[in-house]
Picture 1: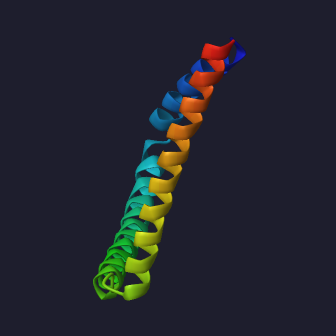
Picture 2: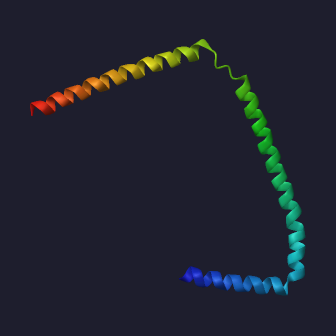
Picture 3: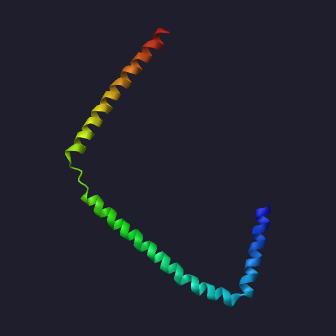
Length: 100
């Protein structure tokens, strides 16, 4: 409730302040807009540069290496072994439940 009252008071004072100091508000706005455009443009340029670097790095990455293929094959084998182990554990659990 206190936040609501404080927010309403700040809103009213802000509106009164803009009306009273309209000239100063426009000067501040004239100073802030170019600064925001400069900072926003610099940020956009930096992000664009990083995107280009990431694309080049992804293109130069060689996924045909034998090390990567070998690792993929070993992981596939491990998955198959884990599936078999899971099935045997399920069967053992069913047998235990049927015995009880």
